[in-house]
Length: 296
Image (cartoon, rainbow, N blue to C red; front, top):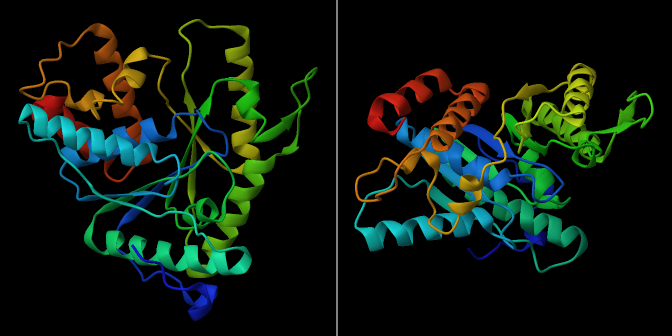
């Protein structure tokens, strides 16, 4: 899409139109936390439950979510199967600089976001694993923000500063401060709030001391800075294997794919259902519909 020159539109005049869609943003300033994998499974779960879903990739340089859907479309064509697809769009970073770049990105985001929000029940936005204007803009439009977090103090450091000896929380860190700023922007713009979920991701199967310590700190931090803890995905190879095919765990019983299910697959599918339920959006109905459709 050709961008409108930022100089023609003041950034504050480029507010998006009121929309009927629920907006779910996957966000974390650290790469490799599983945002795109979680986004893909949320999207397909909602599609299979009968929702009209729009997806927006504002990490168009890495374009993981965009490539996921390209792979999905290619597999469906080569196998002659019908796989549910969202209305997918991507917004690239501006080639301009400074304030002009921010204006340009804002206008292009608003145009694409407005189209998706006007024609879908849900819009799911995947953001980059770094701080950028587009990422902050996407966060400020979230109804629900899902932050996948690898189960380690390395990732937790983006949420809070933690004393190594006592595990005392010294204060919020970079990403938490950014989310707080976007919550304020959202409240000022339309009076709405952002429901923030932190999703413990790539959990190990062993009840290790580090795992318990991370859980303890997250429990205290949730009350302090205002997020809910959501169930995440265990560290399973299957989540990484499916990228090239563009499939999710909710597709594996699709006729024509010929993928046998094992116990690990079934456990992983339950993790996807639990994430759907945590996000809301009538997710209890969504999860039931996924299970009843023969894909659950």
